[in-house]
Image 1 (cartoon, rainbow, N blue to C red):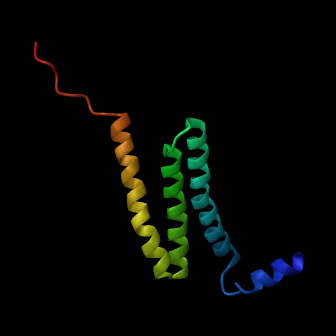
Image 2 (cartoon, rainbow, N blue to C red):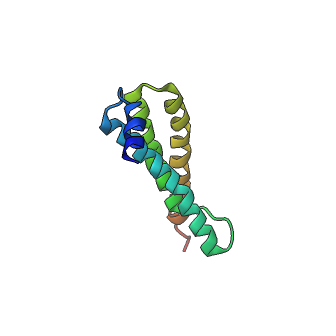
Length: 108
């Protein structure tokens, strides 16, 4: 088994270990969002998207975007940049819904 992993990682010789860990960590965080969504839906008995889904999406996208910068990979950069905007926008909309501004003062 150790030989398998040694051979596997030898193919990534041009990628520094810290960068490989950044990319793998970002992918793991990004993948976790689906587990969060699945658990929340199972608990509710219907399909729901919890706030944690959006935060996890944003975190994973940021990590993968950073990985894409270091790798100078336009596919990753383009793929994560749109998602980053969408996840941020959803968090703004949720914040507005949870914390609406006070309405105009009522007339006496």
